[in-house]
View 1 (cartoon, rainbow over the protein chains, first blue to last red):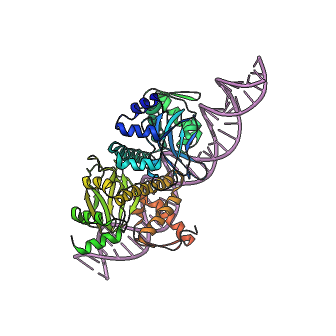
View 2 (tube, each protein chain N blue to C red):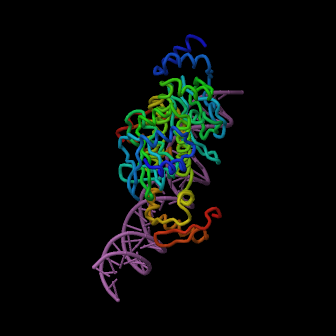
View 3 (tube, helix red, strand yellow):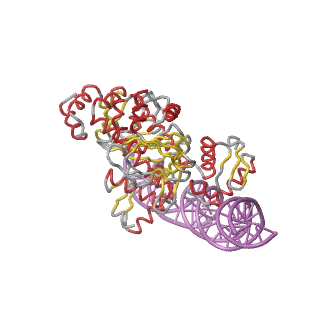
Length: 215
Length: 215
DNA sequence: CCCCCTCTGTGATAATAGTCACTGCCAGGT
DNA sequence: ACCTGGCAGTGACTATTATCACAGAGGGGG
């Protein structure tokens, strides 16, 4: 691998120790992923641990009728916790992961990421921290579905989206409805209400967020 | 610890290697938990990994208004994944765990369960397997909330309950409503419908399950 | 045996969310 | 400039779930 890549990785994963970095550079591959491409599919066998170097991935669940709902986003420096848990045996993925933007992922062969747990303290800590972080995010998602109405869930969704990709949300109402497992009309109406409070402004294929906290 | 306990542990955790077993016996404590007692509370600092030796625990989430919903049950031989993830730093619990029946838990000091990851292969595998299993169960719970109506969620709930404690479900409608974050009247009506199909029979404080698959 | 408390059943009504039908609108391609 | 397809707005209606109000049933304690 190139010098440039070493620096890229170091920048996104500053907590990794030097020899681990060398091991990553020596044995893993970097893959370019196009916008909209599926990085992981439900039922797929997992043979690599996935680290995100650049871009944005969304991790979601899909049922048999094609409904989906968003679990959480992965940002550069994050790892797909699911891909780590499946390392031990050849396990199947329980989730879908799709590139929201063009992205670069590091693919580490499962047997190595497994070995490194014992070999590198920083890797071990990273894996545990990833588990925990994802578990927590999942619990938040669960809370919002279990305890909140759709209006609050939409707010939660928008806030999260702002956090990962800024105040200009380039999504159609239909796409938002899909990720919340709701319907377009309902989302449109709720967005309109938000617009009336001044929290957002609506445009075609794009929502401008002003202030979501005031609501 | 007594010889009896060694055998008890061995029976519930047959996958543990001999030296690990010795370490557990030497350094952990066994605690008796009464029915209804809270083993873990949201916000509590976690200093031990919790293994379940006997009895049944329910793990659930609680919001600020006191609503709750069931995440999953823990049976003998299971571990509380949350208590394992929090070992590294002094982290706070994100969940509630309560004894459904009288139970015995093994408490392993966090720093030891942490060390054992590197020291004992069987422990490491157990921890990873626990993470994975709980994550999967959580995803199932999430699916049922996100994609299913209350009728199917109730069925899912009953099936799960049958799996862990048999076909005589000794719960009031109120308790079920609480765990599904619904209301008593609604649950009563849905149960009545199930009774009419012959899937269950209703009694006071107790539901007799005949066949939940036919529905 | 009776009292009382909890559990259960039920109708009426309200609130939330999903569906249907249709309209106008904007943007890109030709 | 015009067509066309996807996007957004809206009213009417339905379905599901929650809430309220109340009545009866059952069981344990005194």
